[in-house]
Length: 390
Ligand SMILES: Cc1cc2nc3c(=O)[nH]c(=O)nc-3n(C[C@H](O)[C@H](O)[C@H](O)COP(=O)(O)OP(=O)(O)OC[C@H]3O[C@@H](n4cnc5c(N)ncnc54)[C@H](O)[C@@H]3O)c2cc1C
Image (cartoon, rainbow, N blue to C red; front, side, top):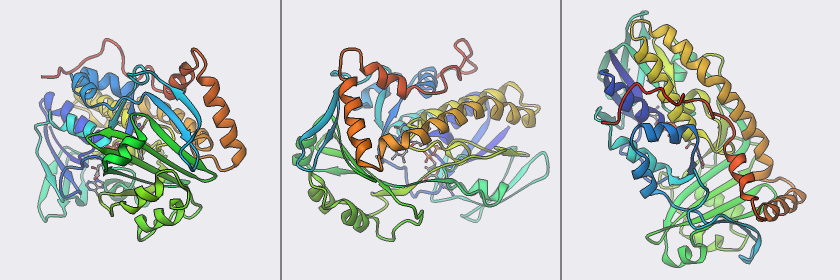
């Protein structure tokens, strides 16, 4: 069987890993000109971590992690408003990683070729095969076309027409800066400053690098033409490290910026074309589960496809039936969490500080772990393994 995967991100690479070990011929195309390094810090845990363990990646992920030993909210002069100490290793069962490091560690074990700077131009199917035309002018005949190309999926557009992601009323930006002095000021703790409708977060990665995240409430989903200038305009007056950080803010693509969205679709597949990861199930950064869910979905899709290669259509139906209820639950959690991660009113900021102080009491960090582990507990059955890491 032959698969073309559009998008060499977390989901696409994980699927390639599994399918090639089951004897499939796999090829990936990726719009970015080269492998996407860095990005933003993610918390990785739950079903995705179980999949990563089955793939034999746990040790390398643990080496790449950035333990967050404290979560702290600060005011404009950098003084703590509230904090939660998590201990030297961070939260148990949670790996804080750069998205690029997670993708790199999966990619290191994938043999399938990746063609960068390329996407899918057109696709036609006849029930048995999909004919794909790529943007580099070449064509492929495959048994399965997979759209693992993120929330703004091109494959989704080709197979389902215009499906607008659900805008959650916020824009996000993230980057990694190298600056020894700023890194020292932030330290090995996740520090955040919130004002109604605005959140800026920073974490020192070591090697003098600093991971930064900016979240802004914005009714209009249209992205600014100059995102670095927009960040300076909205965050530059808030104090703390922000004026210094924003003076060094890079331009895209080193500066990631996007709308915060969820993707909700009735069907995730049409004939021999299937969507995977954010393209059909984006939960948003508010749910803090997207990478984990993308890996779990890839594992389940591979599991269904390889256990019933003669009938891909039924395999795709079962894949969606297994994943969708969990995704709906995680998406609901994400929408509820918006008001806590990016409070729109000052009283919520005060309430959030109070809750964090309470969580700092003995045993209170369990509240954090429980909040993080919403959804997906039983997605990956304990005994079920179809492939081995080699
Ligand atoms: C700021 C932020 C914080 C987050 N925090 C967390 C967290 O704490 N925990 C967590 O689990 N998740 C988190 N997420 C979500 C997580 O990053 C995503 O859900 C996850 O990366 C989805 O994997 P994916 O493979 O579907 O998409 P991606 O990882 O985005 O990969 C899609 C790939 O497709 C490529 N592509 C796009 N369009 C095309 C095209 N037309 N043709 C070819 N290739 C294309 C892209 O370049 C990319 O390489 C966060 C996201 C953001 C933005």
